[in-house]
Image (tube, rainbow, N blue to C red; front, side, top):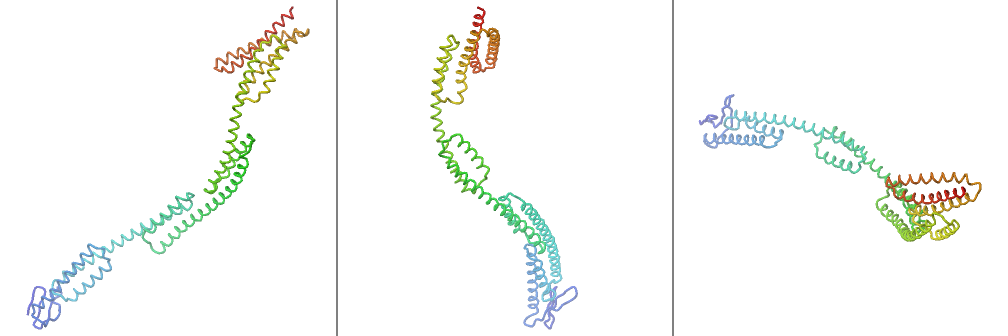
Length: 409
């Protein structure tokens, strides 16, 4: 009989292993010596030690599932429990028990982790749904559409929940996207309709603008072009291609008209500038008639000036008041001289002559005050104009005073 600390072989060739419960039959060995029998079953024990060690490392260092780990443990435990090896089987059993505890602990950890991941995924998906439902009401069509597409990609990257919860959240998410898509389509359909109406309206405006481009009724046509521009802005925008083409035609028609008007106005301005010079010369000629010394000659001379004045034609609008004012001042001086002459020769005019002299003196004093005020304020143009008027009034006053002397004679 042969033996070692963990097993023995009896004289019949039966191999035993020692355990806490006593000896257990390992097997029968007939083909060789007892030492060979023990060595064979000890090698089987070493094989179990290696397998258990490998399983311990896999459990520790890999993501071996609890199910696969448990199946491997059960397989090894069966071999240990069947006592088909010689060695410290109890130690192997303890290692397997430890492995079971480790796997159970990892199973629980994974369960907790999975629950946490599921809860995080649920919260993430709920947040996506809430954001999608908010975006469904947006009118920022481009940015909201891009964000909804990004939310879909985010959704696809999240773990699935239980089927019911996942389906409910997806239904809300999908419904929000559909609602946004429906509103966007309706918006752009309405926009297309508006742009088509704008195109039709602008086609009419362009047609009228083009029909007016050859007009020479400068004032009325320019005013109509301003109205057309107002109507153009109020019509809204057409489709981009149509808008650009219509605008180019609209502006082109206006450019033709305003270019022609500018040419005509440039010629007119040049002509009116020459007219102004001529009228200024006539105004100077007329102003030499004041003060009036020979009423009959002055009236004839003024009539000649006036006839030449009317023959000249228009002057620039902004210069017209000044040059016409000079001529009118001379005309008033002549009228007042005629009235003074009439009063002088009218036996009933003595009293009125005295009153007129007073009025003229008051007018002269007032004009002088106004001239001083104008010059003090820096308004030399007004002061000059009033000075010319003062010359006429002073001449009348002088004549009135002379008339009074005649009345007195």
